[in-house]
Structure formats: C-alpha cells, structure tokens
Amino acid sequence: MEVLLKLGIIIFMGMVGGKLAGLFKLPNVSGYIVGGLLIGPSLLNIIKVGEADSFKVLNDFALAAIAFSIGNEFLWDHIKKIGKNIMIITLAQALGTIAIVFFTMYTIFNQELGFSLITASIAAATAPAGIVLVIRQLKAKGPLVDTILPVVAIDDAVGLMAFGISLSVVKLMELGGEFSVLSMISSPLIEIAGSLLLGAVLGFLLSLLSKKAKGKEDLLTMVLGFIIIGASVSEMLNLSALLTCMMIGAMVINLVKNANRIFDIVNDFTPPIYVLFFTLAGASLNISVLSTVGFIGVGYIIARTLGKIVGSGIGAKVVKAPSNVVKYLGMTLLPSGGIPIGLALIVANELPSIGEAVTTIVLFSILIFDIIGPILTRIGIVNSGEENGALKKA
Image (cartoon, rainbow, N blue to C red; front, side, top):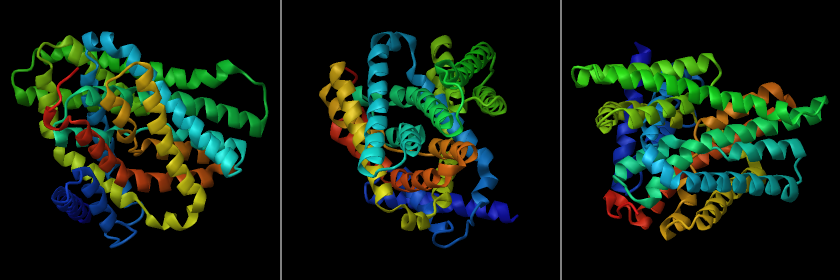
C-alpha cells in the first residue's frame, strides 16, 4: 500500500509541476523533474534514496515507448533523401562534444588521460525522452524537428561506439595487455548490430500481426506487448533497448499501411507513464552532489554545451542545412538522462580507480541538463519558428 501511495504522490506532484511550468511558459518536462526533486531525498524526502528503483519497470517501459515513437521518423523514402546528411550532423555533434570535453578535462583541468577519455565519451550521449516530450507539447514540425529526432536516435549508437572504444583504451592503459583495434570496436558493434537485428525481427512480426487486430484495443495491446518484449529481451541479451524499440518503430512505419494510427494510439496511452518517468527522474536527483564537483563539474557542463552547439552547427553547415537548423540544433540536444548513468556504473565496475570521480561528474551533469536541457530545447524550437507546425517541412 505504501508503494501505491507514493506512486500516487509522484504522479500528482509531476502533474502540479507540469502545470506550474506551463504558467511560466516552460516545458512540462522541466516541471515534472522539479516536482520530483521537491519530494526526493534532497528536499522533502518523501521518496527516499533508492526507492525510485522500485519503479524501474515503469521507467524502462517509458524509455522503450519513446524509442518506438522515434522510429516513426525513419520512413525509408525520407531517409533516402536526408540519411547521409543526418549521419554527418550526428557524427559532427558527437565528435565535437568528445573533442571539446576531452580538451577541457585533459588540458585545462590537467586530469588524467583515462578520466578525460571516459568523461568525454559519456558526454556524447543525448537523452531522447525530454526532447520528444517538448516537441509533442509544442506540436512542432519543420526542418529542425525533422533533424532533431533522427540525430537523437542515431546518437545512441554513436555514443555506445565511442564509449566502448574509450573504455577498451583506458582498460588497456591501466591493466596492460595486447593492443587490438578489433577487440576495441567489436563489443559495441555487436551490441548495436544485435539490437537492430532484434528490433527488425520484432518489427516485422508486429507489422504482420497488426493487420489482424480487430480494433484499437487489440492493436494497442499488441503494440505494447511487442515494445515490452523488445525491451526485456534486449536487457537479457545485454543489448540496447532504445535501439531495439526504435528499430521496431522503424519497421512498422515502413511496412504497415497507415502506420501513423499505431503511433497515435501509443502516444494517447503513454502520457501518465511519461509524467511518472520524469517525476521519478527528479526524485532520483541528489543536489548534495553540487558540493563535491567544484570547477571541474562546471567545466564539464560548459564543455559539453559548447561541444553540442559547435559540433552540430559545423555538421549542419557542411550539409547546407536550413539556417534555423544550423543556429538552433545544438541547444536542443543537451538533455542527458539515464544513459550516462548506466555508462558511469560500467566505469565504476570495470575501472574503480576513476569510477567514483566519473560518477560524481555524470550525476552533476544530469542534475543540470535534465532541468535546463528541456528549457533550451523549447527555446530553440520556438525561436526556429516551428512551434505548432508553423514552419512546414523544407
């Protein structure tokens, strides 16, 4: 009963936070997070340290559903037109972020090479959840939004690759052993390929079975079942649930006639889950970390922000993207989310010598970016003129 009571409090505080954020013309997601922060261990302590883990299954489902929705952006005809450009922009913003964060940590703050490499690779990750909800809230549509969503989706794979290579290099430096480029890249490649293959198989099956659904209820049940199966099997196989569920969505949008009705049904079902997800994210934050990061933490925040803005701007200019994409894309890609936490935990297990320091920096960055990231995403989209679909696709 206590768990259900706290679940109700979490949803209520998230709803209140979202409404208050709306009054100040802030993204609802920022209000959810602040509402969670208020009832978390940092302030009222209604949700105590570690209790958010009780709702992990709901968090996992929310992320999986968001990833499935992002798959909607991978319509093959559209990808053929912009696929190369999206890949260039994604690589530019990821590599730009890695380069600037590494330079900041290693050169300006004189940190060890291993620490600098690991923190730089983790900085590349972008969380899709907050970005997707801001886009939905604004009902945004146009060249910038058409760029944001696939970049965020592909960025997950790029981030995994960068982290896998960095982790292999640092482990080699600390533990010694024979250097092998193949061994450095094989593990992240297997994870990426396995995730996409699993998603393709499940997406193909869903595309076939969805034609036999007799109504919205049957269709919703079927789709949610496949999303849950995709996320669960990915976790069991140590694959990326985000990539798997994104691929399920990509298969559906390309194989099912009038596939948008499937995505609309899912989007109508999931809002309360998203409120819970982001409010829990706020409740999991601990502002006490602010007192331990010092100037290095602030430097990391600034470097990651510059990396996203400069890298994406350069990539967008190279492919001659519309001016609003060049100008505003970087500031929309700052939300960080749960992926860096997972990567930091891997570092803590495999490289204990730097694990605590990396985890502290990552937690601090999430505290900052999860609150201000959606706000900057909203500002970028509004300033680009794409709110309420005002600026149509180029």
